[in-house]
Amino acid sequence: MKLIEDFFWQTFLEEIKKIVTPQQFQTWFTSLIPLAYSNNHLDIQVPNIFFKEWLEKHYIGYIQKAMVNVTQSIPTIKLHIEKANSRVTNPAPLEESDTNSAIGGRLNKEYRFENFIVGSCNRLAHAASFAVAETPGQAYNPLFIHASPGLGKTHLLHAICLSLIERHSPLKIVYLPCEAFMNHFILTIKTGNWEAFRQYYRDIDILAIDDIHFLAHSQRTREEFFHTFNALHNSQKQIILSSDCPPEEIPTLEERLVSRFKWGLMCSISSPAYETKIAIIEKKAGAWGVELPTDVVRFLAESITTNIREIEGAIVKIVKYASITNSKITIGLAQECISELVKNKKPISIEQIFKVITSKYNIHLSLLQSKKRMKSISFPRQIAMHLARRLTSLSLNEIGGYLGGRDHTTVMHADDKIHSLRKRDRSLNELLQKIEAGLQKQENFR
Ligand code: ADP
Ligand code: MG
Image (tube, rainbow, N blue to C red; front, top):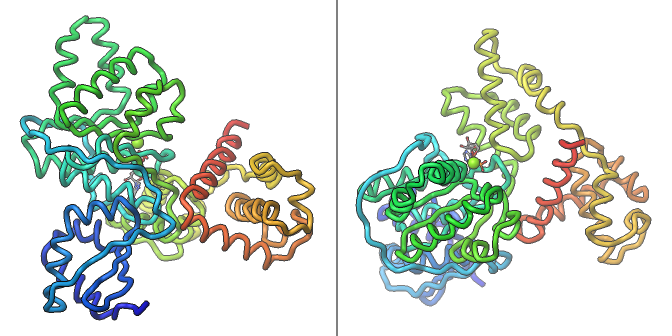
């Protein structure tokens, strides 16, 4: 297949920039890849089915217009889904909703789309949130975002609401942490004013509930939420939910709620890659008016592996410490500041990793450590090497030593292989994230 000329594609993007907002450009166009252009036909690769549907529905006219300006003819355009991502949930588009009255509150003004760094870890969740903010009630209902703590769920929920308030101010938008919904419910049990409670929630245009997994704690609140959900959904009002885990993993959640939470679009956020972490650190430091030296930025990205909230905490600590002691921000100071944070995270042992992998793949440890090369053994072995690289402080040689005396290049190769496989294979990535989170949790409870 003939590759499209870079110049041609850049000119096309410049044309698009003229007709969409910078935020729309950033969300929908920066991840497109030109595949081929010939006989007046353009093939474009998009990250997933969600992008494909959204672009076809909302932007195909713009794409065509931009192409006409570049080529002076009317081309046909086909969007292709990146192979590894062809399985994303089945979104159910809604009819247009009616739009009236009022506003909600307690939103952090810093949690805007403009301040959210997009990487492969959160591309779908960001695009889906942006889509809901662009056309609430018409896009995906409910929008369900799940991720481990500290990866940006609340940020996205606030960004949607802030953007909606700016653009559709007559809408009644309510953002609530799940606990606030539960407290409101408990208060109503005391006062008995059900009329007011129901009126409040049924009269909403957009309901965003953060940390919905807290529903696990109260059967009666779940019952009431079920009715609220139905009432809003039936009248095509937008519902946005965030959770620490997918619906089916929320303990005690009834099947009828599990299935409703999956009606719209479900998306997850995974741990950010190194480059994304670097961008986030720079953005956050910039927001506080601080420019961190490159080696400090790198040090932070390397030392804090998953949680962005921890990264932020570390930056604040460094900046404060430097200003109190009136010293320059150096790598030494950064190390000193976060040594506690790193110290508190006891390293995970390679034995723990072996234990999880052997039980997950149902093979004996001696086989994992053997020279056998069948895929059913070598694959789990490569995963063990990859996890050992990420979660322990062992050297390549040491890890090789634990796995039948393999040399450092074998371990490096395995680590690279699984690392790039995770980028392409969503389900493998999710599985490994779960294993990592499990191992980290075990550590915390030891
Ligand atoms: P969660 O609700 O998933 O626990 P938050 O939304 O509270 O996580 O995010 C934790 C912190 O990390 C917030 O300050 C948020 O602004 C920041 N953060 C998370 N993801 C990003 C991102 N992609 N870009 C910029 N900041 C982010
Ligand atoms: Mg949160």
